[in-house]
Every structure is written in structure tokens, then in C-alpha cells.
Image (cartoon, rainbow, N blue to C red):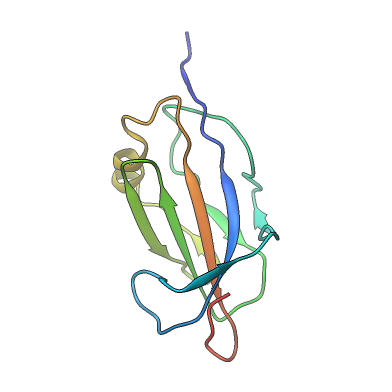
Length: 116
């Protein structure tokens, strides 16, 4: 029997203002979802799936992704417009999360160097 994580990828575009750091701390939520490919919005994934890499199709100077569960957190900088999740970090993030939610928040820096 294949066990599944009931993880819903709630992708939220975050608005933030501040200097570039490993974390974006000051932000304002937006009701708009970012455009990504493939679109992982609100899906359920198997517990043993590989890293869910994706490409951001919105415009911006830089991008960050914050992936988190109730107990674990992972910040990633985009390479160009791609979020590439290292295998070991992915396994650590989703281990012991079967049946729970995985969240992804995306941050975008505009031409004026403000986070959105």
C-alpha cells in the first residue's frame, strides 16, 4: 500500500521590504499566488517523492523560497528563477511529516531592491 503525505502546497506570494539576508523578516501577505512551473498549488504528494523543484515565472531581480512544516524549516535562494531543493535537505524537511502540511512561501525582489 502506498502511503501518502497529505501535504498541501499552499503557495503564498509574500511582500517584504528590507535588506537581503538568509531570511526575509518584514513582509506583507498578498492574496495572489505566484506563477510557477510545474504548478504544485494545493496538491497531495506521496511520502517518498523526490525534491519538488520548480521554476518561478514571475518577474524579479531575485527570489527566495521558505519551505516549512510544523517542526522543520528550509530557506533557499533561487538560481536564476529556479528553486532547486537538495535531496538530503528535502528528505530532512519531509521526514516525520506524513499526513501533515508542507508550506512554501515565495519572496520576490523588484528592480528597486524591495522584497514583494
